[in-house]
Length: 179
Image 1 (cartoon, helix red, strand yellow):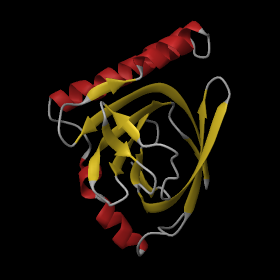
Image 2 (cartoon, one colour; image 1 turned 180 degrees about the vertical axis):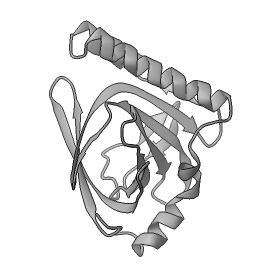
Image 3 (tube, rainbow, N blue to C red; image 1 turned 180 degrees about the horizontal axis):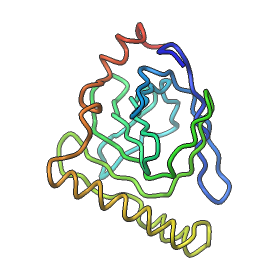
């Protein structure tokens, strides 16, 4: 794959939801692949405590790490203003050329520009576990990964340097602008 390549990320959420995200590859290294979302077509803004994370027209720079139980998104509003970091807790992606497969494990870590990092969607994981959409071992692994990220944040060791290096502006410049 080259910087002009695209990837289709098949993002499953048990029991039966599948979303496919078409993203442009910004840079590909052995330890990370950086992609850029298409402008999002959201019906309503995604918010936490009333603050907008993403809205219609937003872009996100995504960081996918082979073998890792989370990915990271640098979230921006439609006007390009940076809102924070979002880590999806998920199964390590299976990357088969331009098609990737992963499963969402419900939990997310959100670190807004202003404020502390926090865990999101514990209730969704608990409901999925009760409904047997996820097994106990996998749920425990999801909690472990989320806790690990929060511990790294508290210790000043998260996010990885690549996440601060690849801003939206840098990604857009690399790709020659928005789609």
